[in-house]
Length: 411
Image (tube, rainbow, N blue to C red; front, side):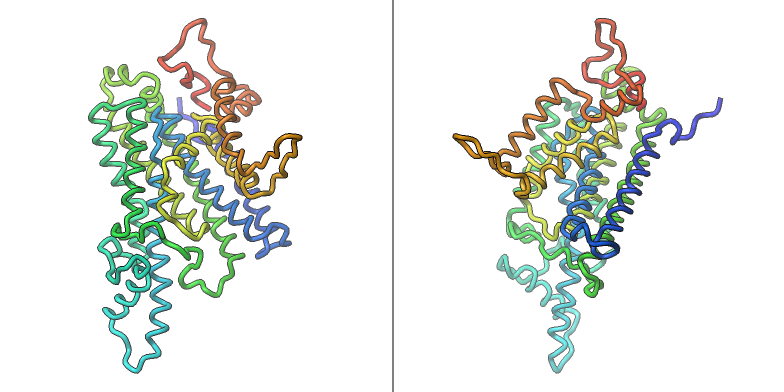
């Protein structure tokens, strides 16, 4: 009997790709650059950044929802991807400015003088005039694009190999991933880290070579790139979690000891998924920060990775489309509440300002979803599609009562 094609085994692929296409086309037609102007450029950037966060959420769902590892360090990879592309953006833009300035001198500058001028412009703010070693490839776009995936991928590979071979699991592994993120952020805060310390990298929205292209058009282009990457990664993730590989990954989540006794290289499977998720998250960061315009070590604070886990939980972990829904809904609501758009509620004894109360509302939502709707928003989609949780007949089918099994694991 021939095996069904991936799209037939996972109908959500067509739905997600169709929704992405319609969404992108609609925003384009309503944008200021290519349409009626109903959606301002600032909102187009918010939507583009939201798609990048959804991309990071899909990676988080691979690690947590399917592999069972609650990684609280995913935003470290997200930030590293932003730093890698940010180096080229800042170097190339500064080089153009310095070259124009030095062109006024009677004697043309040498390459070394040009490099020294660039280094002084970038690092003068932290009291240095030398180009750090970590900026050795900042002049090359192709090299920095490769580093976007290589640096976070190598970090995840080394960290995962050390942790998994030591059989670190559960909450201890979560704490280790959080400690890794905190250590990386604290190192980046130092001025001698080579990444401008607390100042971070700024002006990333100015793309070298595209100075004549307005931000209205650039924001739409980044929206297209973010949507295309989200669609490709969703297709890749759906392929990864399908078939025998996906079955082994879910089995590791449900009963790692039994899978190990069956002879499967558990550490190898965990390392492969963990590293792949890190590289996907880094790509999301590389697309996000040129739209945000700035990156600094505060973006890697452990709380950011916790937010990512909350989005996946609210959307429905173990459902790739649930991760997208959770990230999009919570991210847009966050922008609305914290941006001052939500009207304050006047009470006789107190005024509720949502800027101050948004995090409380988010935390309460997470608690309620965990207690009463562990399958998240995606559970509604499953219910409408007839994908119901398995009947446990009075006993659990695995060590985790929230584990996804039988028909619901195939959704």
